Image (cartoon, rainbow, N blue to C red):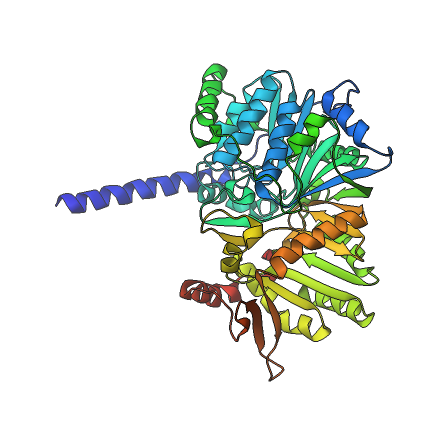
Length: 527
């Protein structure tokens, strides 16, 4: 029968693909060729961005900050800096999605390179499946280098295929570069929690991340540039051509790239609201005037060593961990700590650390995702098992409500989209701010590489707390014990007063079943 023949044919095709993938499982990465060290370019005093940075600074040792909680403003800041850069653009991300936001960034990087700006783009290789033409196409232009961090060897058209083809190398490939960093002309940086995709800049119609970046000028940018250089020149960073093959026809590669990024919605200009959540106008207004409106303080940048992804044990990886830097600062708090961490798995040691703070009468507030808001629901199980212990120490717990974010006009989410927390920040003693890529979970500690900075700046601290409060107080649940002293309650306020819920809110049956069935089999160390 024709139907049976079709089924047999498809089965044969599937088996052939599976055999090919499994045979390629012995594939290995190519040998890294020796290459000269490539340093960041030194800022030229006659360049516009350099002059603006210098004219805006009250003292050479200080760092200026502008918090960027609004997604469109944060994306626009990157695009404005690309368009105004004269000498160099150093760009490092865990994820650059092949969507209208990713294509907008890539198109502007190409345009900068065509006018003579040196572009160095470093992207982690986890989420590049199917996007090789975009990255290799950009690399085909003059003045551009693209490198893939900790790459997969083959079967690159799908994420499943990449992993199956490299199954024997799972330990290495499970470790990823989670850093997010953007530097223009060596003097202006944007860093924080955002990757490059629609949902990080409130451009998705369904789900958007509530996130936070900081626009940085001043002395700490030199530290960030050194961190970028360490990753760019590390043995784990491979030229994209080495992994996907050299373009036989570079003109064709460039034409394909042009077609990808020049046609479609990414050509539309960004439409910004007049002011962001904090009352700032677009960064272009400041750049046009020649002076930046910033808050000033001191700062230090830190990052894991790139070689963390090659660590042969969790203990070795932890010895290179940026998360320890964050927790060391938190544990030294004297009056209060406010933490925003979307993926929060404190472990027994974390519970003890927060308990020690409470014993010293340090107020601790933690803001994270509810199970309904978490885009990685299994991570929530690692957090949920510590909620009771945290509440018993006196820690304040708040969980974001995805549906209530829809009604919080100050978050400026589009249409009927839901919000998910993604900002990784901490405010210590109302004067010191952490912002970066570090989550307080095992993956940040012993698996991924991370980047962050600490800023000593009370004005910035006030702004971070103000932004956290917009979601925490208006779009989240506060947790407390029920009258029995054992079970939990979720409290939320509305126009009719306080509403008390006795079970995890806003969950679908699918999410409940998925977590119930899978959670026992996922080691906490992988969360």
